[in-house]
Length: 165
Image 1 (spheres, rainbow, N blue to C red):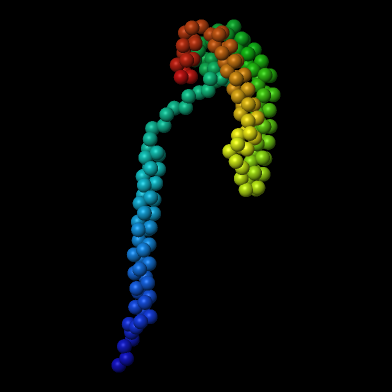
Image 2 (image 1 turned 135 degrees about the vertical axis):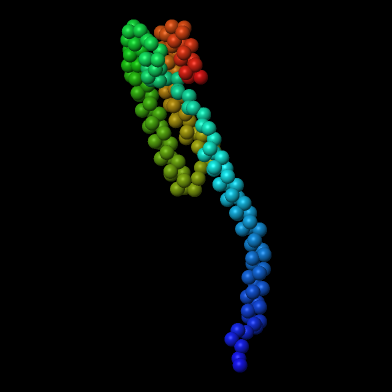
């Protein structure tokens, strides 16, 4: 009777190679598994964290949205409406400039990516117009917000400070 299964040198070499590979690769598998478990735990922790409420931006629009809470008088409402119109006239061109600068920067970044990247100094130099235009928009909004605050009573200003803190 002839044996159906024969252990020969080929099978021994294959089994030895499998054992060596498994022994060499096992720490990598364990590390990858530990990293995956740690990542899953972190994701679960983040998902269960209590989120902090987002503070509203100190803008005239957000102040206007709270006009009922502040119990503004008719005169205050009229003054804020006038301020809002002035703000929109002032901020609209600044906003368009900021958007144009952002589009130009994005085009430059896409081109730089195709060329193989850019240095930090190149990125800073090309992003400067975006930063300047965005700062101008924020500065204008801040001026109008402060102007609106000056039209409120001390109690209303205190309420606004609590809201926007």
